[in-house]
Amino acid sequence: MGDEALLLAAHGRCWVARDRAAGARAAITAGAPVLVMDDGFQNPGLAKDFSLIVVDGAVGFGNGRLIPAGPLREPVERGLARAGAVVVVGEDRSGVERRVADALPVLHARLEPVESARALAGQTVLAFAGIGRPEKFFATLEALGARVVERAAFADHHPYRPEEVMGLVDRATALGALPVTTVKDAVRLPEPLRALVRAVPVRAVWRDPAALDRLLAPLLIGLPTGVPNG
Image (cartoon, rainbow, N blue to C red; front, side):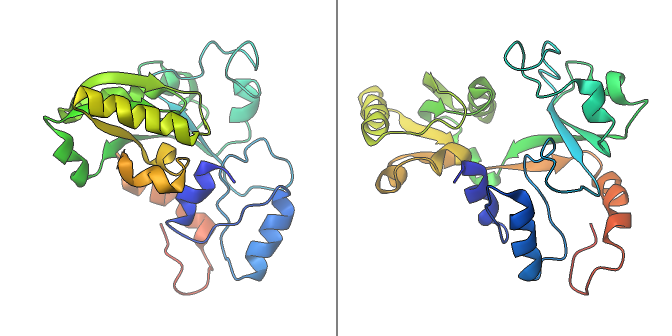
C-alpha cells in the first residue's frame, strides 16, 4: 500500500481498496458514518458531497499544463467547478487566491514541525526526502536551526532499498551528522532500519479553523452521537 494510507491509519480507521466503491461499502458496513477520501478527486467511483482542492502556495497550478507537459490531471477550471473550496498550504506566492477567490472559498494552512522537532536546532544533519518537493523539507530543517550539511532528493513515493538507506546512514556518520527524513518517507524505509533515521513530524495549522468548521458543519448534521462536528 502507499505511504499515505500508512500515515492515515496512525490517526483513524483506514480502508485501502483498488475499487473505491467497494472500499466505501466495506467502511460503511463497519460503521463509518463519514468517508474522507484521500486523492480521489478525479476518481468517478464515488459521488462526493464535498471536495477540497489542496494547493502548494509556492508553486500553485504550475505551468497550467496537463501531464506529461505539466503537473495537472485536468484543466484547473474543470476541477474548480466540482470543488467546494480550495486550501492553500504555505505562503501564496503563486496567486492562487487571486485566481479562484471569485469562484470558491479559499482556506489557508501551513505545515509546522511539532514541538519535539525543535531539538534539531543546532544539530548537524544529512537530510533526505522522496516527496513532491524535497527542497521544502530541507528549508523546514534550516528554519528549525539545523545545519544541513548534505541533501539527498528522491522521486515522490520512492521505495527505499536497504543498501540505499545504509549508504545514507554511513554517509551521515562520516560527516558527523544525524540522518533525518520526513514521516512520509520514514514509513517507506525497511522496518529494521527505521530506528537509524530521525523522522520529523509536521502538523497542519489553519489560519482560521472556524472557517473550515463552517464549511463542514452542514455536511455533518444528523450524524450519530459521538461524531465530532468540525
